[in-house]
Length: 520
Image: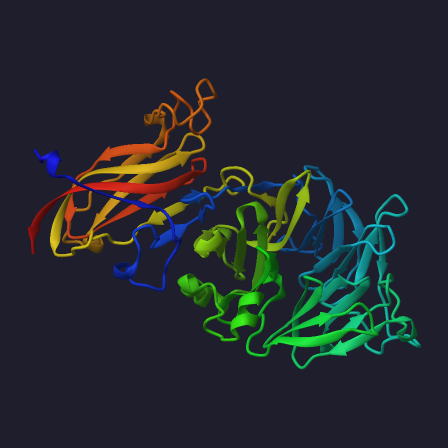
């Protein structure tokens, strides 16, 4: 029997996120060598993500092929608006049917959209890179669709039909991405998205690069291009001025541009970047914020047919998704980026979400994140439920290989204490892996990490509350899980795997207790 008086305890918090650009020997104990479907939590630790569920119970009707992807999902006038095939539809949240509001469109690619109000009436404008931009309103009491046309007598010469990007800025509507003029922006007269008379304040601006996206931020219209970024300031044709933010880097896909934590984040050819960092540093390498997980971007950039992104503000979280044609949803990857104040950015890997269109909005103070499915025609709400609409969420965590400061001394492990927070009943497995998972080392079987076996700690939770809540006195969960363990090695790593049939839970930290053995 081991002499417990000589047991050495070592504890660490789960922090730092997924790190793939340093060897396990150079990592900090709290960082993760593997972190899949866990999110770095702004309150500390790694939390297994929520699932998604149907936001509208009915499938969006297809035009000719049941495999048609959702081309747009947006919310407007208390309705969900979706494009699929050659039609645009509306439905109620939680509804069981869709209503056609625009039909017979030319088959096109992914839509962009803008919600705006120029004249006291809320409107939604959509663009798809093929058709004329279309304006939707409910002024008449029902959904009305009006196409935007231009290039008539006395108007801006470049037609806006086929625009891929639309953005309202200083009461003008800006259009870009026309196939015939990929380096040009056309803007309407003030307060009228369908008037392009130059004598009334409409006009156009050309840049020296192909435009990939538009975003309004801090009283400027940012113009993202393949190799450059510009910003447009001013209020009208009399004082519009365009300046270069950087000529060293661009944005490869406009669907990745989001306002995030007081900045703009976007996908460059070398990973995720922020506008402030790019403009301030001006250096390609130093401006990249995603160096820790760059290999995930390298693996997906070349093969991803499409990109999508969302922001979850209350978690200071940005999610980017890589959708590959023909790839099953269960193997589709993405990246979670969390800004944790002065500690900087932490990352994890997403797996199992394959959106073809996204939207984020606020309803009654709640953040609603929607995505349209790539193949089956449904609209889903993220951050909803404990699974992916009935499919399990496979969560994985692996620590670095821990040597406790001396890789030459054998450690006989005695006990592992897990600081974790179950949000309901969970059933996950804890593994110890010795000597870099060498076949020459004995690898113990899994230890069940089961909240049903854990009682609450007196003084840290609320007495008399429901046993399904975390932190319940005398209930089924508590922050500490103690497990006697077996095995020995010169290095040890911790794994936590769940099969997906479980509610979210947070890994806060670990304490390992061991005895030292002989030096090799």
